[in-house]
Image (cartoon, rainbow over all chains, first blue to last red; front, top):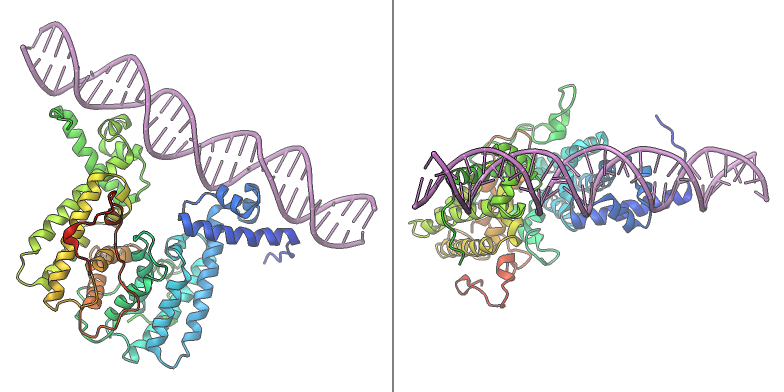
Length: 218
Length: 218
DNA sequence: CAATAAGCGGACCGGGCGGTCAACTTGCTA
DNA sequence: TAGCAAGTTGACCGCCCGGTCCGCTTATTG
């Protein structure tokens, strides 16, 4: 496609500064951190932001893309782990840990922004499905939960702790543990509602109506 | 205090319309629904909004106050229920059901707004603590969870489903059920982190440093 | 029914936002 | 080292927001 030639040295440096500053700023102030503040934090002019990212949404998308890819890489490695139950728990732990504040919620809201993000997210969802399938077959999680359930519950620990002021930075571990206990087979009660059929936006919204083959939602 | 004499008939009607419109609008568009849109939806002028509520925050606070009080009333009734475990589950069900969309999250974020809201919230938190204590004594929930845990987890089912597009309106029941299973004693694993000490803003931020006596956080 | 004050509405204001642009600076290359 | 494209910058634009204000309408009351 567009074979872009390498960035000038200062431009590359600014781009890195910008991404870091934006990640921090979004983490602290949420989606409505202002572009001006991000620029100030990065030590560049506001115009520079828009030279690198056409729109505020594109900047967000770039950050989100990184996170999703990183998370997916972890997940794919864990597919080979010896204990599938532990592997799933480890994945959820890394996912929650990765979002220092509550930024991973972007992961969900920012879906519409960028085609690359949607693709990356589908990839990650697919990995999660596999992790869950393995854990289920191994008896580590109850029979009636699906990958979609886990994807939805993934952000809950951080969401939940985001409301307690001055929370210890790893309080989320407590709630991840509680929720994960809810996913275990021991003492599970029948669920009152079926799982969402095509669980997430990126999957449902494919233009041609096809579905990723490997998903295999039961 | 200010012994306000009764509102004029039309004013009272507008106030009701306004509260209803605002509740809908906030539910659909979140915290940043605009005052102008709310006014339009209620069929009144923008000035009228500010005649009834000095600030957008006050309008929000009025809505939140209603919800909290309603929820608290349900909770207090459930304190006399025969089965404490079922009572707690019922309370959480009503809480999740009450928020058609995801509005109950206001309940948390809007804390700073109004002293009345803070008081009402403390009252409700206290009720939840009692419900949890009773359920725990009855063996319906595990020994290591506290009222604070339940308060934090209360909004999670709706949060979680808010990300699935065109979700069936009671999908949240599925996730409430999973999370509640995580609160049960059967198959519980030890938790990796202690509960938050003074869990919620309203409780922590008392001016004089005292604590509500009845709370009895372990 | 007349007088009055309570209530109403929408033009208006200041401010902050995302995004643009033209003048200026600077890293790259021949 | 000269020339130029790539990159930078902050003033600027239009928009929308929360909130104000004042002339108008209307429910209430004697």
